[in-house]
Image 1 (cartoon, rainbow, N blue to C red):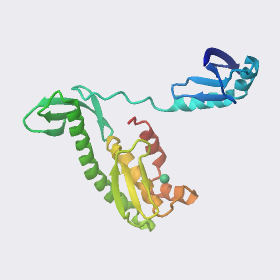
Image 2: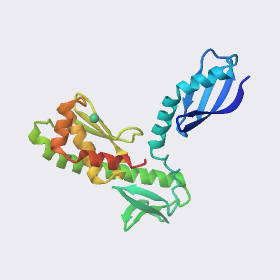
Image 3: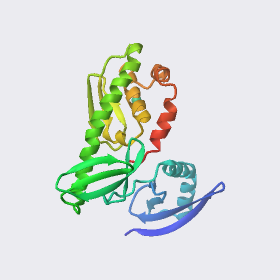
Image 4: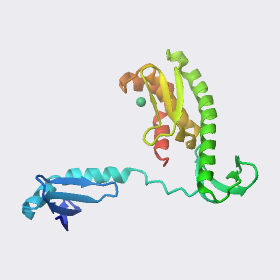
Length: 239
Ligand SMILES: [Zn+2]
């Protein structure tokens, strides 16, 4: 059986509240979850003052974890695909307008993304139409930007990419293989063009310097002196 209690320790001027779970285990384990909650699991036989002492010793690490989770952007709101909901495209917010129509079509006009559909109340259908629209636009837009970006880096003796792929990813904006294949996150289509260019230039620089070493960053800064600003802007985007 697990016995659960709550405790507080202090570390400098900070307090750490944690949930203690005592059960049949051999060692003490501390976890910090992205919602900043701290759980300590300890063997039931361990005296409480020993446990508190051990947690205190890890206080610095706990606060570091909490600070890290706190610095992350908030989780994206759940998408419901209803009229009025905002969706991003090239760094701008647009409102959805769902319209019943015989023809299925997605259009960008004014501050709106119009979704014409036969099934106005079918949220899955609306989601699919919008996703398809994003993918089509990503393909066209990324190709344009890649051509422009490649023109800029050519003179640095960078090979042309072998293949460009676009895929919806959760954790990264882009990647590049040793062979020269570049993979871009489709979700980049929600970012401003200057951020898309940053990711493309970053990956193109890898075609010359595969690792993130000094030479890589030197080249990146040469090609795109303000890359850090663009990167910061990109990090503000919540997918
Ligand atoms: Zn990289």
